Image (cartoon, rainbow over the protein chains, first blue to last red):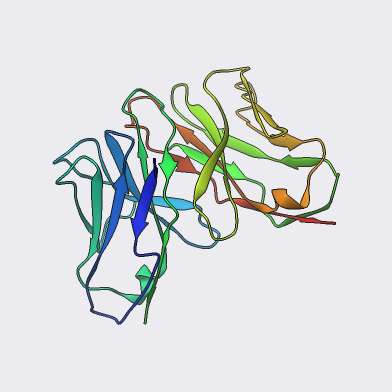
Length: 113
Length: 113
């Protein structure tokens, strides 16, 4: 039981390049989330999904797209990376019953030059 | 809107000292409250939680009590260890919000021998 895994762990991009971050969970959770963590700002929600085939915007969605084609996977895409997207990205998942806790992946450190 | 405010860090303590990290919240309805911990280079782990007023969450010697009258959820530990050095996040989930977490900015704790 691996929990929540994220790929890759580290990545360096040049401005304008694109990439996709992969999140996978093996707990059969309905809900999945993508956050970014910046110094002094806690974690901010980018996008989330409440089930296979569904996605919704969070607090800071601009510049990102997501897809949830399979229940266990949640992909975060950057179409044209900008230096402001340098951050640590965390994926999380939870059960669908009310106020269930979230389980987090180990994070992806992304640097955009 | 809903929000969480934590005391600013870093908090620096000697081993075996008493720890308090303050957390207050603003929320509509009756949120569930959480403390997550992030050890260096890792993702977030749930430390403890409380789902209703006067509940006390506890784990690994840490405790926090849900105080509705003061809208607070302060984290305490009677005797900290070097291994407790980490960043601590207070967070809440509101009803009907698809379990989206609202985080405080985090408080870094450094414990010295």
